[in-house]
Image (cartoon, rainbow, N blue to C red; front, side, top):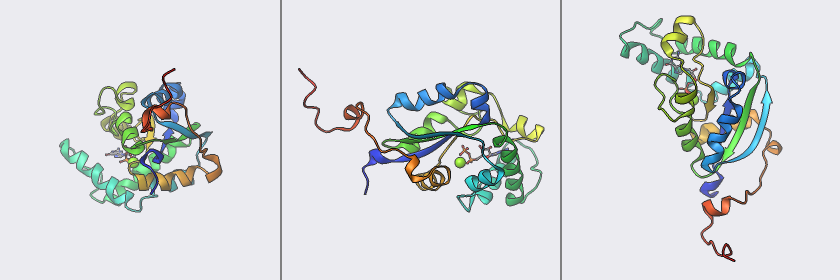
Length: 201
Ligand code: GDP
Ligand code: MG
């Protein structure tokens, strides 16, 4: 099995992140933690690509629909439908409109616990509830209440893979194998090497 330091995750800076000139700020958050950028491209996704991206998990419709219905009920609101799949279809349509309207920046980040750490730095899905100190908590103010009322996707700046398995599938959807670079950063020694001999002069 590959060493933990080889774990990879996909991050996509969504149109609002690009348009608000937050590319550098977002990259810096992952970079300063010690993760290594191993692939990056700017692209304008097609609707087909957005659909493929969100449905790499065949359970996405059921899970997202169920979560969204529970969210409505937790706020004492009536969901527009009790059918999770129909509801998630609407969420996906809004995501297609959102993600195809501007370039996005797709990246692969590598390092120990990359998936979990990137999710931690990125913060919870709904910016209104994301923790202070996270990207979604610090740089944007959107809410499901506002985005649902206006009939659009919630603007939360970044996509980050949820699990290592999801990450592997998403990375292969966004990048060809030879677009991902295997290389070492000098700073990795201090993060991972067991033996720190050779530093003292
Ligand atoms: P993420 O991994 O944190 O981006 O969240 P998910 O994978 O659960 O959801 C993917 C996308 O679906 C989010 O970025 C939102 O645009 C949308 N979404 C998820 N849950 C909800 C919800 O409860 N309400 C609404 N309106 N959209 C949602
Ligand atoms: Mg997700």
